[in-house]
Structures are given as structure tokens and as C-alpha cells.
Image 1 (cartoon, rainbow, N blue to C red):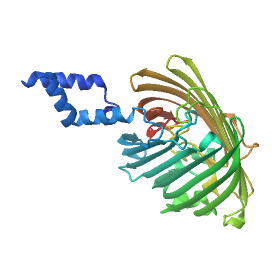
Image 2: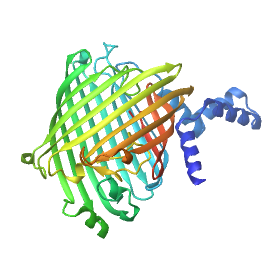
Image 3: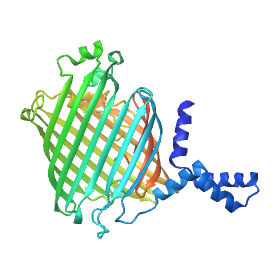
Length: 397
């Protein structure tokens, strides 16, 4: 019941309907002797919901290409493990060549979360489209600090509830790239990866499960990224294909725990089905190579983008293959709904991969248009171990 109240409160705060405002105005008019116009004007300027509705309306209005479009909003969410939380979302759209209407707007988004059980997370991501789309640059930064549960490495350990233990996870992770255009929709360029990981306040079971693995690691990698991108709008595509292949190297000479490499592949496709309906699909894989890959760099199941609803990093191993298929449907006004199904399989190598260890995922979500093409999302995802809620900015993929 409490969970439902928080969800309803979040939807009401995020996307108040015009009809609700109209009904309140009418009720207010019946109680006062002033004219209807006077009452509605007073409500608009003095009522909290009226002010919030006016703010959201202005945030969703298209801005001139030479204007910096920035807005911020917050709302509640719930996660079975992290508890009840408050999320803050900020979004910015800007144009680096206002005279070129064909160039996509550059974007920036920030999501900050804090919960009753001490989880603190900050996600920062953005993309820059330089003049004439000759160059593109992306960046992602994630700051995490919370007491996380831990079941060990590998599927068998993770699927054993007896291994449930905990430690305090403090992590900084950042990625960036700078890509130059080779041909129409095709880009190539260098990339960089950095991660600082501290596993503190470990209990006895964690120490037993980790064995000789390092508790604290610092990883710096350089790589090369090849990308094909024909999406019509990166933040909320309705059609197009996205292929992203990156090869990273983490040599010991850069201060890493050991020398290893990683190959990461993202494949996405989008197609309109009918009026307001879009079908999107994604396939993602991360393969680590090397005899001594630090466990902090293993592939992890569960995030705000993939395998939504899974407890992040319960299932952890060297490699992962995962995918999802999502139906997006505009409902009315600024509101929309989504439904998705997905899977993931983490494994040590091709010899130990087993189909029966594939993890299922499915869920539904609500969307509220916050800016032109930028949605606030509230997702309810179901995992093998129970449900989870996500409050964030932008689409999952």
C-alpha cells in the first residue's frame, strides 16, 4: 500500500494532467464569489500544482536553436533493497550550430538518487554534436556510494541465497570518446575509461567469497570506438540503427592491477509500428580477456538501462550477453507507456556458458514528456528475485 502511494505521488508530481487542474479550478470557483477568469488566474499564479503545471508546460515547449534549454524536476521512487528514495533529474538541450537545423541538439542529463537505506548515486551523461556533424563526443560519469549486498562471483554463487553478505561500495566510473566522421552515419575515434573501486566494511562472508581478489582497484583504459548511427533522435528514437563497437586495453603500465583487454558491443534498432507506437530492440555484450582481470571490472547484471528490476551486480562474472525488446506507445498529451522483455547471461568463458543460466526480465513503465523528445521515466521491472522501481531521465536505450 505504501509503495502504491509513493508511485501515485510520483506520477502526480511528474506529469499533472490538464484535466485535474481544470477540475480544481471549477471547484475553487464554486466556493468563491469571484469570476471564473479571476479564480483561474489566481490558481495559476498562487497554487502549487498550478505553478508546477505551468513550469512543466514551459519546459516542454520547443526553444529556439540558439537558446540553452535547461530544466530540473524531482520525484519519489522505491527499490526493495535500497528502500524509499528521492530522485532529482536535470536535463539540458543546446545547439552547437544554430544555423544548421539538420544537426541534432547536443544534450546533458543528470540523475541523482538518495534512499532511506543510505544509497547515494549520481549519473551524468551527455552527447555533443559538433558543427556539420563532422565530430561527435559522448561522456558518462557515475558516482556510487552505498552498502551493497554481495553473493560472490559467478552464477552459482549469485543464485545461492546462503551467500548473502554485504560491504560498502564506493565507486567512480567515467567514460568518454571523441569520434570523427568517416562516411554518412559512420564514425571512428579514441575512447577512454576510468574506474576507482573501494570495497570497504566487508563482513566475514565477503572476505571468504573474494579470497585473494583485491578489495580496492583503480583501472585506466584507452581504446578505439567504431560507430554507425542512423537514428533520427538519439534521446528518443523512432527509427534507425545504432551499432557501437569498442576495443579497450588496460595495460599495467597505466597503473592497473593487471594487463587485460575488453571488447564491448552495442546494437540497437528502432521502427515505427503504428500511430504513436515504436518498437525498439537492443543487444549488448562485454567480453574481458586476460588471465588476471580484476573482479571489479567484471560484467554485472542490472542497471537503470538494462535488466531493470534486478539488484545491481548480484549476478557478476567476466562476460555478459544481454538483450531487450521494448514497445513504446504514446497514450495522451504528454503521457506514454512502455512494456519490455529482456534476458542476460553472465559467464566466465565459452566453455562454462549454459543456456539454463539465462536470467529473464520484463516490466512496464510510464513516460512523461519533460522536454521535446526527452522523457522522465518510471519503470517497474520484474526479476528472478523480485521487482524493482527506477526513476530516471531519458529512455533506457
